[in-house]
Image (cartoon, rainbow, N blue to C red; front, top):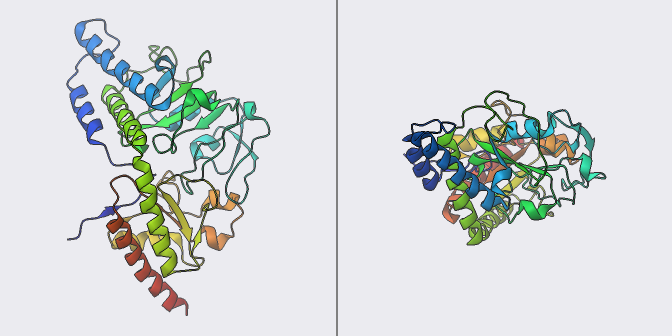
Length: 348
């Protein structure tokens, strides 16, 4: 049986070995990190080490990192009750707390007219399009850009940023809110006052340890230009696909993009059909964001970019990582091309 090829890194990156090792070690810490005895202090030390690792990787101060259950909770903590403006290209976790008043251009780029009253993602999960973050921006979703492109919170001019561990090879179910020095948020989860009073609840020590280790490893990969090599593999994929099907539309290609993301469409060939066909062929891809309760549906993001319904409904996303090889993307392109030929034959 042929091994499956995972090409859905933007949905969730494979767990890094550094994160796995840190989590296993942390599971042996039996103390509650709020306890003052030796076991509790040992668990607390694990958390604070990870806080420092995440802070260094994102270019922030350790005391301004608030661990949460993920970027979704971080979004609620940063955005609830503020009525900030955002666009339709934002993740659902951001859209849930914002007012959809901002628009994007045909490449998915957004230019907030009032940054202090706006939320803007650093990169889009479906298209990979990068945004120019304006000085004084209230909140930014760093989830997809963190660890893939150079990004320093302290230099970004952003007041708050959202992070997620599993997008960088950490465990699922852990994330963080990053705060500009001097700013604070009102806790939404009340109780014991953990996380400096910003988020109560006994900390997920193992998850936090894995996040810290993944952040440190991701920063090292970025410094070593690991993602430059990934971009070359992504470009090989797109060139091969274009040679097989010249009418393929590569979405966001004229904008700056994440180095690992390719979103493309053959109008009339449903994205959900392609996802299922590629799954049967042994390749994991997606048709947009994974955060839609397992449903496959037409992309709201692509609609906001002004793309016709037949283009948006036919789009798929291939997102790769440092472990993805040229042979793997060529294998995908061959399998996709065979399915494309069958689609063309039926449409004739």
